[in-house]
Image (cartoon, rainbow over all chains, first blue to last red; front, side, top):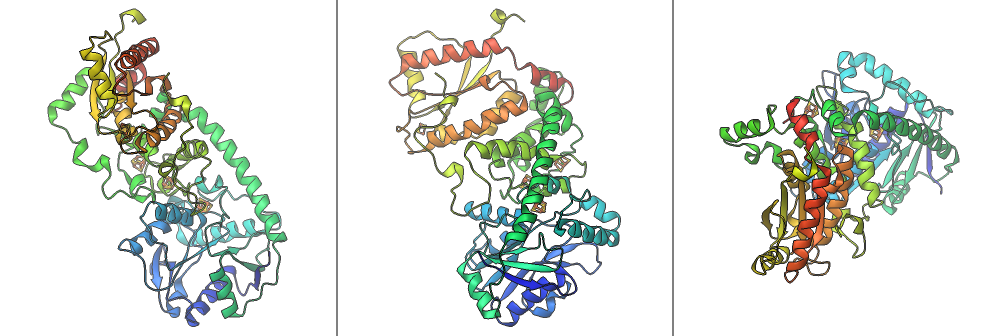
Amino acid sequence: MKVAKIKVKDNIEKTVLSFLRETIDKKLFDAILIPMMVPAGDSYAWVLAQDKSLLDGAYYLPPIMSVQGAKALSSVTKGGKVNKRVAAIMRPCEIRAAIELSKLNQIELENIFLISMDCPGALPLKDWLKDPKRGVDVFKKVIQHFVDEEPKPDKSVRPACAICHRFSDSDAVDLHIGILGTEGEDILFIPHSTQAEAIFAELGLSLNENLSRWQKGVDEVLKQRKKKRAQVQEELKSTVVGFDKLLDTFSNCINCHICQSVCPICYCRQCYFDSDKVKHPPDDYLMRAESKGNISLLPDKILFHLGRMSHMALSCVGCGACEDACPMSIKVAQIFSLIADRSQGLFNYIAGKSIEEPLPMRVYEDDEFHEVESP
Amino acid sequence: MKTKDFEPKIMTFLCNWCSYAGADLAGVSRLQYPTNTRVIRVPCSGRIDPLFILKCLQDGYDGVLISGCHPGDCHYISGNYVARRRFAILKTALEFMGIEPGRVQFSWVSAGEGEKFSQVISKVTEAVKVLGPMRKLVKAANSLVG
Ligand code: SF4
Ligand code: SF4
Ligand code: SF4
Ligand code: FES
């Protein structure tokens, strides 16, 4: 497969942006959905930029994940498809969440051109907030280590990123931006659709490079991440699997439901656990307390987590947004990675990997899972 | 508590179109079966959210039985097949949570199978009896869990 190679000018970020500017210039897109640094300089917000000058403060790969990109995209297409051509540039886990949401009828992907990139990870929000300026420098190092000919894992990224083995997945996108194995000197624009190829032609980009160097970089990082994932999951199993351990793990949860509200996959307009269904008359609580000895308040704390696991383990994309936002530093995403791997594995399903693969709950075989049937 | 003294409480979700009628038939046929079950009638086994099951286990039930139409007989075509997939996931989740998967059972009973219904109830009751009370949850409740 041949791809387009562009020499990096100044830095990767600026080079990608100038490519995007040109697409707007040539009217190939009407708008670009991209993170933009906020005026205070301490965060990044998603914007739909229609004017190329607006792209000045944009970052195709910001150091943090503030709002999960799929959430931003779904807010745009809630009311139906967009009628203009929009390019959305997002991290692979954000893309996968967007694909998953489109299968769940929460995002309309028509006219949306998806762009992903090799993702080194994102910095934990808590670290970032202590000193955003320093964070920018830390993230530069993260990228350097990532694109090195011999990539090194970087300890500053979020735990969910350190174990992410889908950092370069691009099955469902139109265009993938490859930076691995390039030493930061080149950027590879890898087309995945005829639309992408048409855009290359418009921009006069020729397909002049093969993928061997890039592939080597991808394989190396993949090896490292898979190893780390196995190790972290093994450790987690011994600390969270089993009822008492699970309870201990969530014992300092303050029941704020932030993990749910930032999760792109938890799209219900109202979560059952925020509804009147879980509010009972006073006597009910006294009755529960009587039968069990006591009940902890707020009620239904553990049930909330178990409910969430059973509802969305099949679609969890491992983006780490839940864990990043948790004020109590509970390893929510890492725990979800265990249960998600198991449940998705039952159906050989990978959440958000491909648009064609149907959601496991929308299809069935006559002859399967007989082991769950009682004799 | 010895197994023989322990009478488990089992929540039973029965599909209106088949197992519920099967239970009815068992009743009018005066078949004998254990009285440990409480019945909730549902429109289809596909109506059951895993959360219902977890909620029962949290609230003091020792086991849960779900019974729906035989494969191919669901009135909504695929409700029972999807339910089976859901329970396959729930089973792995139960192991993860340290709850014995045997506490949750899933069967097919048609309207004409009064005899089978009484057998299923006996078997499930026996299986849960052997597992004993949902001690973990009770213990957990005492150590501050909602
Ligand atoms: S979870 Fe993976 S794709 Fe998402 S930000 Fe982290 S490394 Fe990137
Ligand atoms: S549960 Fe956490 S890791 Fe999984 S999709 Fe939701 S926010 Fe991302
Ligand atoms: S964000 Fe953290 S503290 Fe809040 S409900 Fe989720 S796990 Fe509990
Ligand atoms: S109608 Fe009985 S299982 Fe669907």
